[in-house]
Length: 108
Image (cartoon, rainbow, N blue to C red; front, side, top):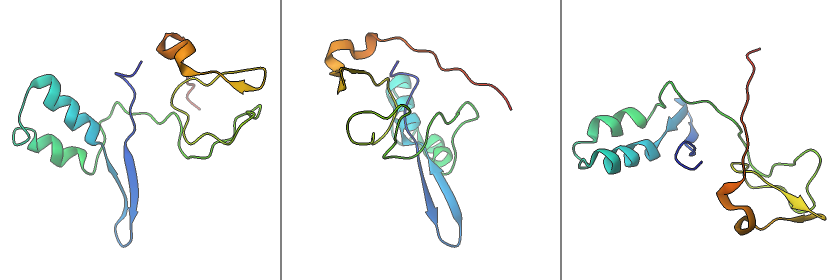
């Protein structure tokens, strides 16, 4: 589950607009292809200002309120499954990454 998901960043630069960066893909290429930082220069230049065409946004924001509402504070992010039992969050050690889920989308 963790090999296909990661977060990229976006920030607003006054006078320029929104900028996106994906340093995780640069690091992944360095590790998987066993290349140096200098050899990764084209990737560093590309991913500072772009994400590849395979990216889709599943969720954005923070302090998220689920429906139905969870018993605790809003979630800082919602990247992995969240579960409660008897109004209490389940400890991720109980289910870890063994919990299954499906992401579906429909073009509008």
